[in-house]
Image 1 (cartoon, rainbow, N blue to C red):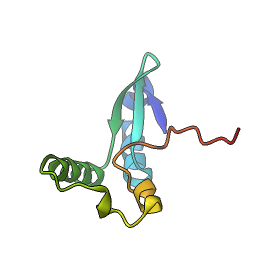
Image 2 (cartoon, rainbow, N blue to C red; image 1 turned 45 degrees about the vertical axis):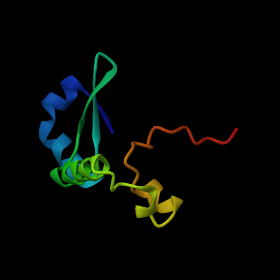
Image 3 (cartoon, rainbow, N blue to C red; image 1 turned 60 degrees about the vertical axis):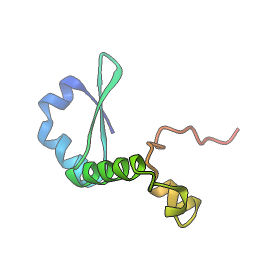
Length: 85
């Protein structure tokens, strides 16, 4: 979900609850993306991935298949336009 900065400020408890239950919550300021609120668990997992990548241990072979990569991708694929043309 995307929140405006003023909405994120006024509903911070709700923002945190959703980050814990639903995943990353995006925050915009003046209509532009500025921050992402994530759970501690997601943050720890992301930092561990960065550490493995820096050590050269993060490779595509860590994923079982493409579907596994899609569900555990180190990038935000939620904004991809997947509409059929």
